[in-house]
Image (cartoon, rainbow, N blue to C red; front, side, top):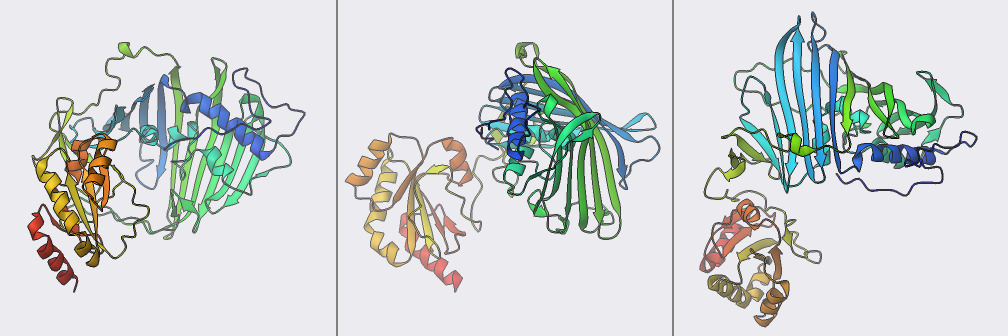
Length: 489
């Protein structure tokens, strides 16, 4: 998620001097949202270095197990950021009659070009973890759960977009005529009815226009995390032999409330450091679910010495843990964790046969002018520095008219990074009539994801772009094309 800085309006809060909007002038809805955005961004979103500790508690959860006896859950959080490095952690303990029933840990850590997410019970080693190609701020704050993200300005149901952006996109945000008192503080109230639900937000002008309260009500086709509230529940995959619980039915009403917000002044900035969260759901079968929780930031350090925090930015992944690559969510684990590194599970890459052709997003190539609908595709991975690759492209070029007549689009991909001018000169000199691209980052990973085992490497798809043949010799191309067309018939 990339959060764009927006120009502040006439009444925007001047945070460096901690100036608030003049009380004698009534701000507009846009002024209030600009001020709230500025306050929140100076809190954490644009700070390149900080460390914080926080705690939370789940005190009620009906009807799924809470409250029974003295059941409650305690959660402890830590969050480190050092420019591009992120480390977000959660420890959770579920108590029953003052005894821990379940204890669990979660971590999202991003170092360099890789991010890793690990969740497991404390009494068990994690059997798997997830890997991400890039750092994701939203993955890091997701470890905080629904309570913590509200303190950071991300409300449930819009978890990937901060509240000010949600409301700024709404054309009919209304500012109520009169100010209202919340927990002893006068606030401006913004209200909006949209296809995302009915939003009401109370902003305190005397504390950097931080939220004092927020409520969103959703029902019917109102969107909750991009899907209608009344969407049928997704099927849950259970281990063999596990008896599924009785389904609740579809959600007909969803209410999220963030209130009792505590705001304090730290280093000249007004910061929300905690509050109470209530989730309410009503189901089509008449059942109701209420979940109440609290969140509180205990410590914030805007100039931490990470050399003294030895485990910061270190993935807590035991050797032998299987790693699922989130860039390929429908494929089995690709790696195993060994001594702080990803090691491929197999020496050979995973075949693409009978699977959709991967996207070309990691290959530098312009395909905007190509109409590949209802046409077969031939992808040729090559290296211009290798003679077999050069010969393959020259032979393919001689068959360009034949391939075009058969509705085959050819794409050539240079697998190693070379000087683009030299590559273009070679293409022009040898009259290569096809679209040519180049892998420009992480060549080994991209080749692995495309199943490339040697060069040159040919991949053929049918007209629906499902891979029908891969790794074959050039003299087999006509046979593969014929077989692909016959299979369609």
